[in-house]
Image (cartoon, rainbow, N blue to C red; front, side):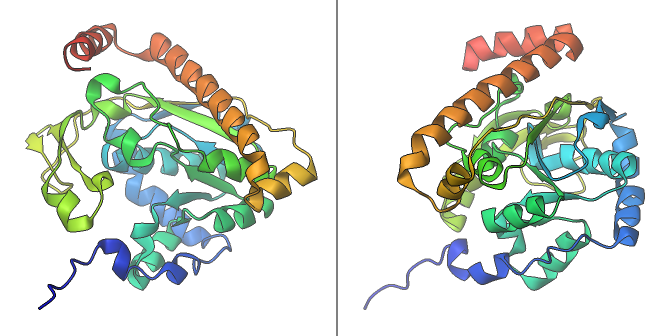
Length: 295
């Protein structure tokens, strides 16, 4: 008798549900409550955000480096909401929107599924979107790789900017990888349960010991979060090229790859410069030594 096939998480997610997120801005009252809810966390990390005035008044795609469990987002978003007085729509992992209850909660914070069609509509409506191109690769990287952008193969953010005509606005954070320093990954249990290596969970250091999964007992180390907004990056493309990107024309792929490589190099240079100016020399020397041993 045939054995029942193990069901992956992707088998039970309703794909149509990803696109049902409301595209209208979230209720201002929800955003004020969001700021009040997460402001203590922002203060715990002594969060500082410089050059917010560089964010355009219209639609823009904000990109950045990502930390373990997205702890950096919970500190950054309240500061951006308070300073800009406008919502920042986080483009989240589609898995988070697989159930209606979760979609409702995330929408109250302004988050939407990380789908290109959703992003196009938001940006064309003049809204701000926030995404982390490295995703799980970036957030689960080893502590000694903390200032490396793990954006290889992640061209989606460039395609969104190219097709929508909106600029890319880099926001990079120093100290965000010091809250939960990752020292390794579990490569068996969750890969088998969820069907993909992207769900390998990290081993990380916390203020209360060694952690594996997120939870209230994983108290983050009291690192200082320093964010800096860089100048927007604009792609000067014709209407025909933008349409080709949106329609997935193979002829446009060399241009997508070139702009992705150029953007990645430019952003890595920005992060390197920020690390030289703001990173702790002691942490920098330790990270370099660990990188030579384990890299």
